[in-house]
Length: 339
Image (tube, rainbow, N blue to C red; front, side):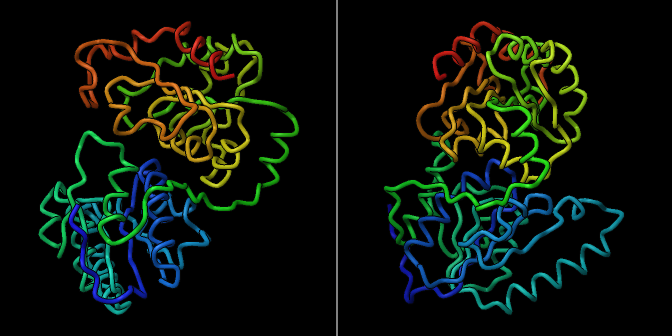
């Protein structure tokens, strides 16, 4: 890989990786490598509203730029958005960054990278939506490679050592609600039945049946949109599963996952949090590729069907046979092998 020539040691670095939850977790080894290489540098991070809790008060991140990217898509608020973006551009330029790195690779993130006016602006050669036009240097990341290793390619290009992969998760004080839950339930596993794509979701009835077969209680986590799914799992579990879906913020979610014996999950953000803590994961995959987005590291098991059309990366599918073919018994066997 061609190294990027940086004429002076950067004093201030901006990382642009607004979303999603799993992608930000994947970026943490990159953050660790950059901080090791430039320990005196001040690192700032552009993150989407709602995900800032993952990086808030992180000892390696001096400042967060929280953007409401979902509002930016609302044409009814285009005037307010234009004013907000203009002000953000001015503030980013005033920071006088030495190095700006776009890990997102979309038009919006490319423009933010350019707005810094940093002398070195780095992104991927494969970046989409024309975002690579805004970089001074481009790094080939590749497609059939795990996201963690892809981000580390940029770290290596700017002079960082990447052999020792670490996930510097934030130190989070447990809330009273989480403490009480852990005291009441004892040992537990975590179920993650949600996913951004419907095609990535294993049937709730399957999660419920699986929970009824396990020898410890399970805690169902998820967003408010997962509450109905979670209720169905509770019902099917015969009292073995407890839903807290929609009842936790991101910091409480991290605390719950950190205390789990193991995690059973679809391809989702919480899956990557568990992997970052080194907690054993049984991950059910269908339309997506675990080579790219599976749980990183050892002690994890991928359960998937051998259907020829997978991975198809489709968000919509009439049959979703790839997920339907994964039996409860097959997942149960995987769980028993890591317990």
